[in-house]
Image (cartoon, rainbow, N blue to C red):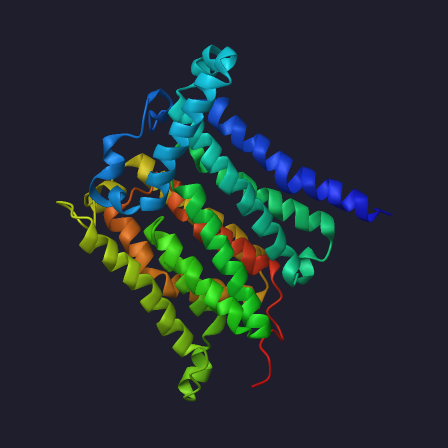
Length: 334
């Protein structure tokens, strides 16, 4: 029988230490052939042009964390400088520090989500750990496309999912306000913050009740949409770019390149895997979530690249959340 201290130690090992080690291996155990981030001395110009310019929080962190790391290495860790430069530039190490920090926070949020109201499949703590680590592996494996924003975006997305589930449980207005703040801030990270709206709609909106003119949660949904649109539109008015919305249209490439098709297949099979783990209620929620996420999926097909399977990670993680959470009898009696 595990004591509370044993549980805390195991939680620390499996929720923080092991995920961090896996993440470090992905950055230093092999080198990405997709983005030459490892050899860049500073934040590249493309981070401040086109659609990347609107990701102000990651860009800000990339610049200023690099300055801090450079100062510390030059003034206090000069004896390590040659060793560090052999493993990548100080800019690359800074990106790793930023991403690993938010990645570990994401692992902690996942831990809280999986324990929040466990479905039958996760009542066994060992099964819960396996699902948690499986979700972690999916996040780690997509790091062959290292960016300065994905780990931050995943953290905010999972935080929004946790707050949505808490609001669904207890209807505390504080949780909804925090969710709105998360959506607002995460829109300054990446446009995938809109998926928090899809998640909220999937778990809170009931189509059958809508037919009976029961509009519970509709006001909240509209408010979330406004909270997303305000910073999204505001950034595009304040930061003027030649191309405001997309970098390019890749629809034909997505359905002609074997790499892109394999990326689409990866995302589809991965989501289908979590779909199979769900009970009937979870499967219905995944279908609803995909319905509300249609604009995002269309944008991936049009202006994203399927080979960058990191774009599917929020969908895959949502599948695991729907697998883990017991939705029955969640809503309070109206």
